[in-house]
Image (spheres, rainbow, N blue to C red):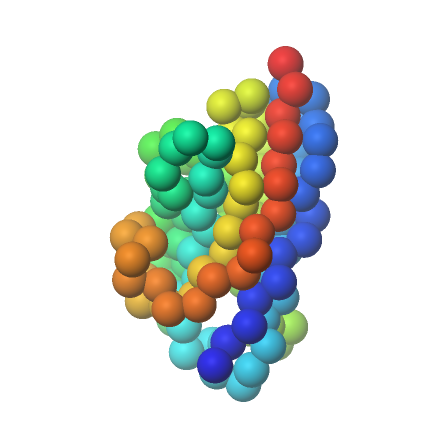
Length: 121
């Protein structure tokens, strides 16, 4: 079992930055790939970024490539999402998830409750 708790969301102006954190409980954090997903009102949940458990793979959605950076600290059981140059279209609830590496949310086993990110224009 892995329990995930996101933090760091908030309201920011376009062009600003936020850093999301996801703290995981359980000893098996390093056994999972970690992903960030987001869901805007009226839209399906979409992939944002993923970090392989081995540390040798990172994958980003085209919409955030070059602006967002995913990282993880296995010693702290935490995964981060640094978001720069934020745009109003980045507004969504952001979720972290643990599971197999990839962009398909249906393959992830564990989910946090999400943190709201709102970008004003």
